[in-house]
Image (tube, rainbow, N blue to C red):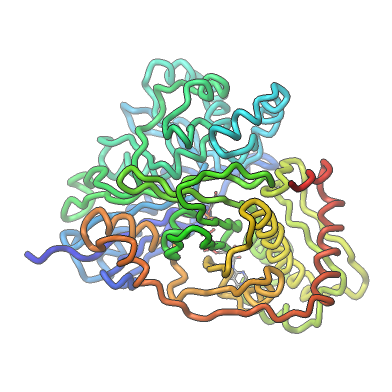
Length: 502
Ligand SMILES: Nc1ncnc2c1ncn2[C@@H]1O[C@H](COP(=O)(O)OP(=O)(O)O)[C@@H](O)[C@H]1O
Ligand SMILES: O=P(O)(O)OC[C@H](O)CO
């Protein structure tokens, strides 16, 4: 039989799960996708049912393989990429989760984070993990589960429970409970992992009250981590790539050189800048995060995380009912010459980088009787670009220079108007790739490296194909007052004064 040359990528995102089969030219040849339920048990809380995630993963994987016309035996490997920080705890014996997954957007541990800050440990946590004390990250969510599910803490201490981010949970299920492992990009988002020594940190585990017995083994991004259980597909497939979704997008965009950057516009927006082998501590409240580890060698990135991007467009549709489809916002934004002074600060779940204000809430300023749905839609899109500018500015201050270009991807980048406004605000060319599914592609790349479909990073770089480039075109005298208006709206929304920039 000929050597298998296709890869199945599993992209388990915040609102949907999709599986894509890629060929050796990095072209998608089959796709299957499902949206799944979001649970909001209290204001600021967000949960997912891990059984929904598992069911959708298995069904979409089977559908994509069937649609490709290939059998499972023709799949060289599976690459898993996932919404990061979202955490599940399950029983090792039964494999059943003890509670719903707590999602990255969930704010229930804001008080726990504040209590840790009051102990004066944030600088120590930052220097070891590259993160800040914010409910976004998994560690305080794990402690919440152990404290609130009856019997969980005792079970965890006795080694009966396992914890994992979604990659880890899916790897466990796909291997029939044989492998409890996660990769470095996911481990690094827990607040429990030292990104310099590259191991779980005993002191941090004690500080966050997480027993080390529940933690998974930490791996490179590319390697053979296990095989699918015999009853799942018509052949056992190696699981050969594991990577958090934003690091996957950086990899899928072929940003392998120091100084290259990408920004992904889905539910949230995540901008990552490759910093090479150095892990700089940000002076501007950005995160330092491993981008990938191959053969034990780590490449790092600076990251800016915005919690709400496309989610604001979803709110225009589902909350306000002023649009029927997200794509309508493109035409609405072009129907009006400007936002009519309307600014939206989409702090629906607090604000992430560079402000880190979990208590801020969304606001709309500048409403007059002349404001229309088109102005609101335009303000929601503009907010995404203004927030991106805040990140880029922080990155440029940290690294000495802005990247030469920004590679963009994610569902929102189908919006041409947004891409041009982004270029105008960022003042760098905005490059869209031919394949907008860069997250899934990044996971496929990792799995393909481990299974010999691709030979190395140069081979992967050759597969990257640009679709178009938006050049900055707005005159400075028009841009400056827009940014000033945004800054003013932001200042009115923050619950604490903006930290001084370094
Ligand atoms: N043409 C568009 N204009 C603006 N927003 C869009 C457009 N198409 C999709 N979106 C938004 O993009 C998001 C979906 O992007 P996607 O990358 O699939 O997200 P995720 O992976 O986070 O689930 C949704 O929030 C949707 O509202
Ligand atoms: O599911 P996405 O694509 O919105 O990504 C979520 C991020 O990984 C959260 O850190």
